[in-house]
Amino acid sequence: MEYMPLMSFFAAVIYAILDGFGFAGTAIVTLIILVVIGLIIIVFLKFLIILIPAILVAIVVYFLTGGNLFWTGLAFLLVALLSLVRKI
Image (cartoon, rainbow, N blue to C red; front, side, top):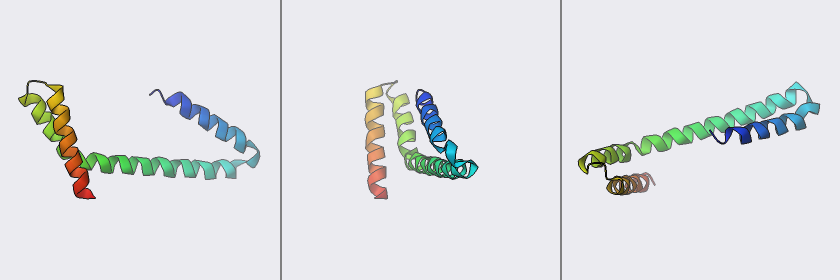
């Protein structure tokens, strides 16, 4: 949530610049911003789906090792790397 003031600042700057264009200018910028946000969400969800096996393995390793974060992180990184290499 620490990026919210930065996003508000950029939104204020964009709307200040486009104030002279009227409604059509802000509608186009709003459309572009929403498309970019949608693409970011789609990419994030795709990575999340790819990383589901790594998340599950990390949860299992966490409970098997009694909460050892080193082995949990190592298991997550290895399975995530294998998942990403397999997708390429």
